[in-house]
Image (cartoon, rainbow, N blue to C red; front, side, top):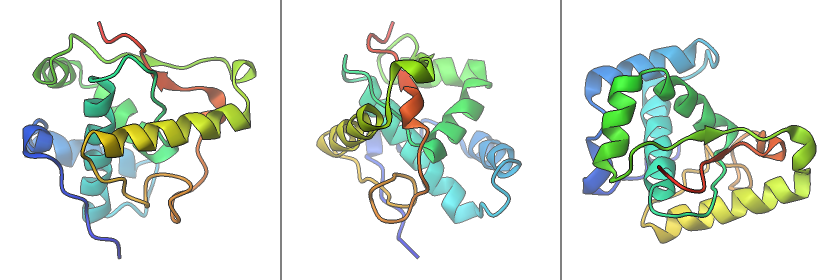
Length: 152
């Protein structure tokens, strides 16, 4: 089992324990084998992705597994908006693009840029959640799903 990467103290507790539990339960509905440890790691990777997204104007691409947590978090609008504000942005938008607009090569390149940006921001990239790191399933990145390039 891969140890859970540590989050930087500045973002470690931006999602309270009750909401973390709810997010894991909600993602588990789509991912039945998701245990508590892996769920906590998924939230950590989502937080690392969003915290990195808040610090760049370059669009970043979540992995399929990270995106599952982000989709659930977006449904909890009040804590999501508070989370974004704690990162210093008004809102981190989820911007899906039509599949025809992005091909697999562009998606793979976007995923590599995203992982590099997360590492450059000081976060660990958990291989269980990112394709090309040895463990994670394939991603939907060919569909062009990104954060907003300008966090308003």
